[in-house]
Length: 233
Image (tube, rainbow, N blue to C red; front, side, top):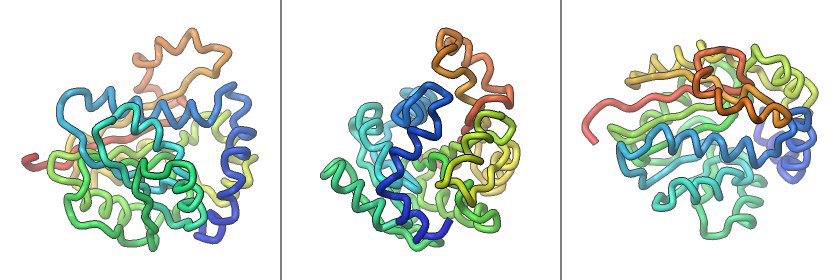
């Protein structure tokens, strides 16, 4: 998706997303929060997270949840859409830094962040740019820092329906978990792991307690791939 397309949908994004995921019974806030909560639980007390990058942060949906689960961290939201960033600044004044991106080179020094994540961003990006952007994300993570990439699972039928019927996802190309894991491994990160998430809609939420046992099963609505940059912290 081009910058102009992101700008076009920025004002309508929340309403479009809410309508598009109605079959799940959940809200956009649910999907935003679980990702941040997952990262906090996986990282646990292994290290202090002081600086976080949200790659493709859009209208800032992740900002309040980063504040909740990483209360001592400084957050930067990066996006190609100036309109999205303007909305984010209005929504979350003084809660994060909002930075424009040229689509190719991240405007940060090497080793700036302890944690970088992308929440369902890469399926909007042309495939030939995936590896170069992943390398850029790794570049700006400090040694010992982490990268998390969340994406839609193309093998989940409800996910495919949601993407195929969403105007915002008109040009999206879903990426398999195994392919994303392979790309991230090529960047040289260590401990690269793939986990599938969100197996049950709200009506079956009582079954969600079993999800930690199912992260290996490629049927969840979404997945994440994470890895740690090697070297001393």
